[in-house]
Length: 536
Figure (cartoon, rainbow, N blue to C red):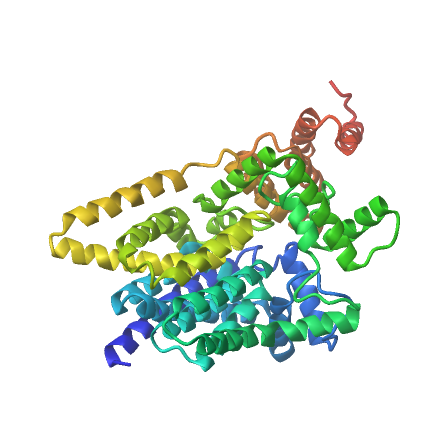
């Protein structure tokens, strides 16, 4: 590799690492750093068990296992130090930017690849996910490895490359189970794209690719069979998740099977209990999955128009500029990091997608060569909206969009310097249309963000940090003044600090907004009695 290219790649890594490192330093001074909410807490608990020697466990996997094992290995080597974990993650995230640059070089050109790498280095959601205790950082890394190996295979296909690409995809499946669809699409692409090769050669390549996927998945399947008595390639949560995304009450986002029990520790328990109650007998993990899958399919068959509308809703959510929060929220972290906040305003999905659309239009003449990118992108999109949408669920598509964005920018420069304005204007119009669509504000953005602040405040309150929790509840209320539980929990924190008159205001608001919540009324009456004042 030319020295100039190496310098550029090192610069990409350094820029990516520094922006992530200083973001990490900012976050480390806040309550968010040590809070492990929902999935993060489950991963931490699981990783501590693994580091303590319980490598196999005793049940079929319900959650994707690769990240907890990655975390457990770090705990074993360095101890449960969240700063060290995040240092490793930002290093991997920075390396992913370099891999994206190399993949862009393979699919398009050196300049396109370098642009993609620099874009990834400063992409706000990528920085955010790299400092979370979440599996998105590994999903990005293995997706970037997959793209690089597939790009190399376009020019000089070989069995080792196909084996490596299959292994990368298999590891991605242990983070995002929906990526299993990509294995089928990639196999079909190998067979049809390389039609000039003999059928025997193509089948050998597909076999090598499949062997790579199997190398990652079969140990997990064997482990599930040994400890759980059932064969699952990855996890047993397909059915419940499919139902959550496809039922009469679904809205395209996560909704727990039992209201108020959306925590990780309740998911499998509730799915099993409800299925067994409905069937009137004990069920195996596969039986539970089949029950919920059947209910989802019954809904789809009986109400096809309703389901079609739901799929359109998920399509809108997937491509919208907003980073749909799970328990944690990028916008909460932006309030604690000037770097992340500035980049979140400058370079977000609402800008990335129009750039990628420009690149898609600009490279349309190369569509046959780029078919694998289209297939991977479509596979990630379809396999996500079949379930439900979070920002971290769509995140694996980002490297593909980055490659097209890098290609689009470099092609735009060529057209501009060559005075070729017609194709430039056509692609620009497509990008502007995409920007107008993707940046349409979601009507419930404030409510979604409000709940993320509420989750942080509640976790801090549960730890006894009443004073620290108050600003998070106040921000939740600012974003959604009708959020009864935020008023109630803010009242609890204020009362614990002896600020009874302020607490009284929020208890009354909680009762007004949710009069059916008995605990809100009881707490209000208890405080009034303590203050020796009757309710008005």
